[in-house]
Image 1 (spheres, helix red, strand yellow):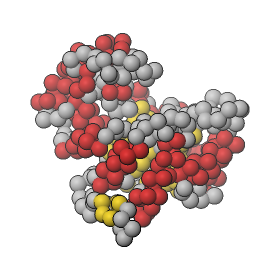
Image 2 (cartoon, one colour; image 1 turned 45 degrees about the vertical axis):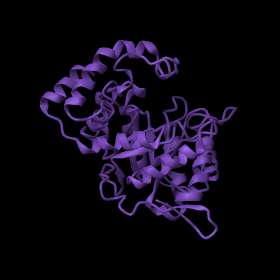
Image 3 (cartoon, helix red, strand yellow; image 1 turned 120 degrees about the vertical axis):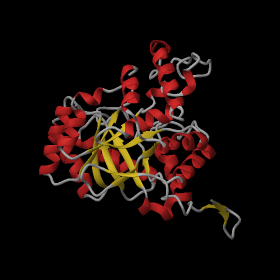
Image 4 (cartoon, one colour; image 1 turned 90 degrees about the vertical axis):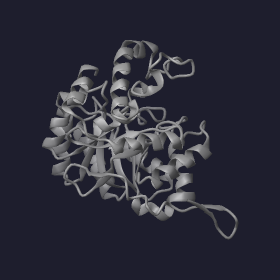
Length: 336
């Protein structure tokens, strides 16, 4: 809801019923509950994007009970711009609600030139969290992730840096992303010894990308850490977008690096079969794909992007039907 203050400036007031319909799930065995659907700011929040649209997406998300906003230092484009824009919108709309929000950022991918702007060194991680907090205008983030494993930096150095970031009051919890099962178990052991709350692993997971089932989900269950799934729609393949082929204005037609025409063509029959199943369930394919993830063991939340408020509302409707029959699971497995 929007009202005008005494100066005539539009003021955002959150929907009073925002917590009535959203489902909240516990992160492992921590005290943290996350919304079943969380909002990622990887796309549509950079300097190149429409800021009015970005503001409407954030407002809609919170009004729907989405309390978890996920960023990273290099989201944009350009790098840093998603955090900076989020900071401006946070100041305008969400500052009164800070204690109701669970804000994440990450570091681990290329961010600035030179040997100290990438991967997992102590210098990079501590410099990065300082920069991120400044861009967002925050005193702390709720969770800070190491974004990917560093094959050359000792894991202990990276984990001690995360621990010190928590002890310095710059993050409340820590997480990791894109780690394999063995690295995850080792990280969990180190963080437990350091008495640092490690609560989430962020992993790519969808009907078409099930690598986490090769041991990672079992590891997370063993160490009592939750999983938040990103790319749940396989970069758009698990939507109604490609049922009748590849539209000229689609990602696949433009040969984006993360979705190529050949990927869609190779999966087209599966996409059609899955869309038919979703229709029988009274859902769109995207809604079924999100619901399927939330039905999986250890999945705390599904991280979605949105190009509009309407798209966000549509995807949140996945929560209306989270149950699957054995036959439906069989069809999904056959087309994954």
